[in-house]
Every structure is written in C-alpha cells, then in structure tokens.
Length: 151
Image (cartoon, rainbow, N blue to C red; front, side):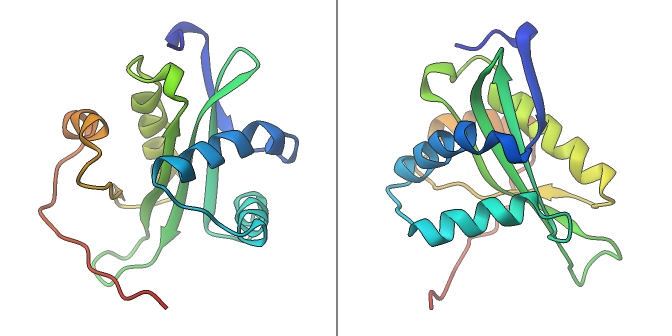
C-alpha cells in the first residue's frame, strides 16, 4: 500500500515513459485487453502533445510510479464548455485500498476544472465492484447504460 503522506501526483513528462508503460500494461491486462504497439505509442505521444485535448497524470510513491490517470476533454451539446472524461484510471495492485485512486480522481477533477470543464465523468465495467465502492463515495451514478458499435 502506498503511503499517502509521501504520494505525489503530477502531469506526465517525456521522461516518464518507462514508469508509465508498466502501469498502462497493467491497466490493459486488468481489462483483458491488448493493443498494438503503434496504438500505445500514439497514446503516449497524444498524452504529451499540448495541442491534443488530453492530459496524463502519474502518482508516485517516492520515485516509484504507482498509478495513472488520463483525462480527455471534449465538446458537448449541453454546456458551453467541455466535459472531462476520465478514460483511464489504474493503481498498482500492491497499492490499492490506500487512497491512491481517490487522490488520482481528485487531481483529475482539479485538472478538469482548471481546463474549464463543467464536469468530470467516467465509465467502469459492471464487474469492477472494488472500484465502484470508491466511485460511489466520490461521484454520483448517472444511471446511464453504455452501448457501442465497434468499427
């Protein structure tokens, strides 16, 4: 478990790729997903590109990266400003239950507010009950069900 008093969360930098990749891979494995290297490389480039409407955060316990969060800003027909979509949130399994996820969500919210978003929202799989225990404490369930058409 991470010690919250030594936990720091900061935006991704180009020097963080080696710390980010194992967490990204852990996130993909958690959801039983795999991506071509070209997709991972594109995601990394986009997260660092100031012209992209994306932000990446890493949580560190000392020098060790223990969690990540990715926020995508996008337009909506409902507000004038953007929404912040917390697309990816992952905490190293050895550090779960210690508040890292809560701190990453709080920082993602602060980031979305600084970027002028009117809300931060996210999805999770219905089987991710451990995470939903946290999510139910920090956000409101909307009741919406997602549908998709994959291309």
